[in-house]
Image (cartoon, rainbow, N blue to C red; front, side, top):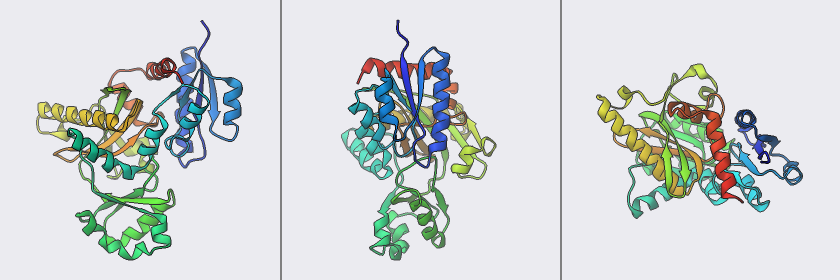
Length: 332
């Protein structure tokens, strides 16, 4: 039987290039250890030429940020008729834009309900500030959101918490918006949700989903920002979550874990994801509030998905091979 040839696409030109390269290298090592022929590829101007000349059986998209999560590379792979791991381009484009989350969630709620909730938010494009004077109306923000400070300000697209700021008062809002706009051409302003920060990895697709044990995230600084994500000593992770973080007794804590897993599966299904996604949320004491959805989540040594896999007692290499086999069976 011929060896399966897998192109692992990583890197690219996004702000998250360094994270992507680490994820891609981990995927390469896992596949090589299981006897696959692996072609590491940077997502650059030579990508199409190499894909055409190498003709891989499957592609594993290990891109984070623009180029991968916006659906560009998945669209290219579909055009070249190369099976790949991950969600389809329309799903990528929707999940890539954080302001789309409330629209999808409201539709889900109308169609049958969901245990998930989401923070109130407003999204404003760069042009609104540059050409239309939106900065003069920032005092309206708390009133329009119906909440008080602190607020969360972040780019409308992107990951790894790049450009995220916790804004404690109105005097810092403009500066936070400018910081977010350095990473994208639109900014998202939302209620800062206090509670237990959780990340739930979901596997599957076509109406069959499996939620792995949630990872509880407890940063020393109180903010799970880019710096904290890169420093293993700055954050404590617990998988499964500590029962005491969620409730006074273990039975209630177990129920809450189940509710959070259900919410993650509902979000995964509502967006039409397949293979893998990571749903980030906060348990505020009443409900899981969904913050973000990543269809090409990090797979580095300090990423959340490998922690969830360890919590589920699934070997990283077995997981990667499972995704590759699914994509190969699905075909182009």
